[in-house]
Image (cartoon, rainbow, N blue to C red; front, side, top):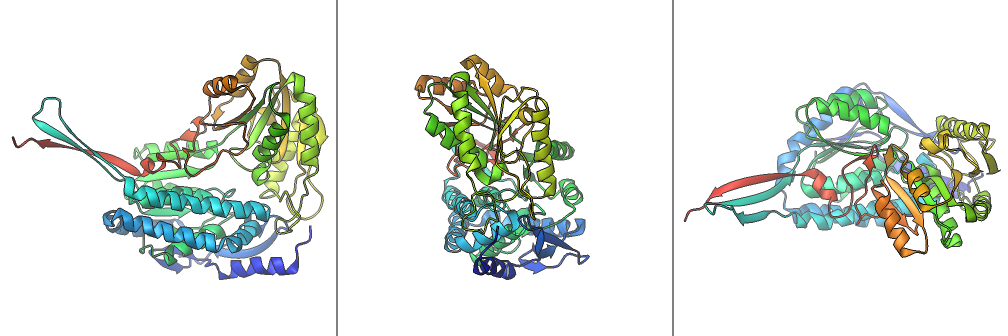
Length: 494
């Protein structure tokens, strides 16, 4: 798991150049109490940086700055708002490799995946730069003819954006892009495990010409206290959160007191359905993509593999061969396919799920446990014969484990797939177009990959149903989450 010295040095140089303070009202500063927060390389367990650790009062300072900047930013012409986003897109693409090296160092994913995420993150800024000038309204005669109905869409106002650690830049731009395009100012609270990517992003936005106070970033180890204080503040108008369903429920309850507008992208438990007529090679390739992206630490990751009994053994064998052949190591090592999990807690959680399944009768086909040595590594794992009541079927795994269950017919497959409180993503593999569309319509899921294992796209609406969240991010509807509708009744002067 050795990393070439020059590669590690290049990554640390990027970390050194990235500001480590809070970004409030256009200035980099320490927290009020001077506390700092360590950032760990999950592949080695070593600290690579320390960033400012915000207090509740720091959070209020950030919201005050956003509130002061709101009117001016809302009045900024849409084209100018879009141009800031477009310039930031260009800068991110120009610095993609440097940003990817730092992302790998703080989060662990393989360098090629970090490169892909940086490009993906940039695309949200390009997409919403173009959407900024397409905010429309309406004009029509009232049915009685004595007045006119004028409809306009205006920015919601200052927003709190809470982002997760697993996609530390893309989950930021997916919120910041539409918020800024709509004319909203924001306070961003990145996850404590991966603050560096967000700090680098706001540095780029500043360079792209973003006015002071429009984006403010607070890094903190006191997420609950800081967030709760902001949710009770009358100046805040919206919360956008990406994270676990339990935390989402808590934030929704806290937001209810002020009837705060919210959008939630929460947990997933994605079913992956393989029918008897599927192209098995394509299905296995899709399974590798859907399961192993980000080491399985993705809300869209395939979590439960339901395979028709007639092809189940072949699928298991082929998938085990692919996953067993992946090289586990430090993400900055050019030969690495699979990096570490985010921390030791994640390794323990995944190991417990595998142990529960095997105790219930599942067989380990490949992998099955943590990798010995430094860092938080878990071997890519395939389980067969997994019972329906195993925890890895009911719970989000968030790791490189693929439990496989055989089914006999379409109704059974759909029933198994829908037997979850979650409904974010699903995957269907079949060569029968009619079946593919029919099953897609029957699945209780906000997104479906039909014969493909990657579904995320800035041009598409991302989001789920049931306890996987509220609202959509991306696509033509993504900006709607940051706009409110106003209607004016205009008396006809004739």
